[in-house]
Amino acid sequence: MRQITIEFCISNLVNGSLSVYYRLKEDFPQLEIRAERCLGYCGRCVNTFFALVDNELVEAETPDELCENIIYTIAEKTFTPNSYSGGRSTF
Image (cartoon, rainbow, N blue to C red; front, top):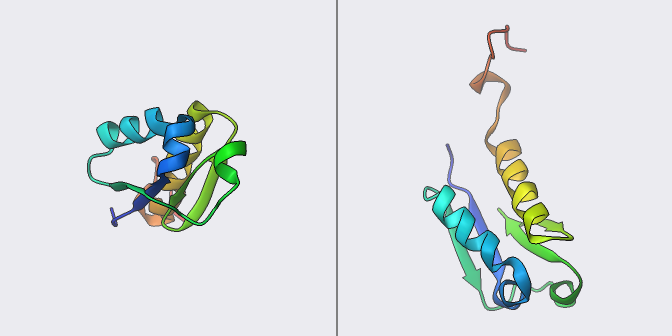
């Protein structure tokens, strides 16, 4: 799996996404997960929960939904048609 970076804004962590940060750090130790002073998405910290996954904005209305959206985004970035056949022929 290629290296994926997840970045959280410290202000957004304080506003409620800290549980997501710790959960991802624990569940995905192979990923680079870090907190940054500012990600340049000012205003979103008050209105939504968000993180950047390889510089792609991922957001949600709740911390649990944010975690699910991040995991989904990671899966999209790491899955290739040749990496899984599921017992079926590949594309």
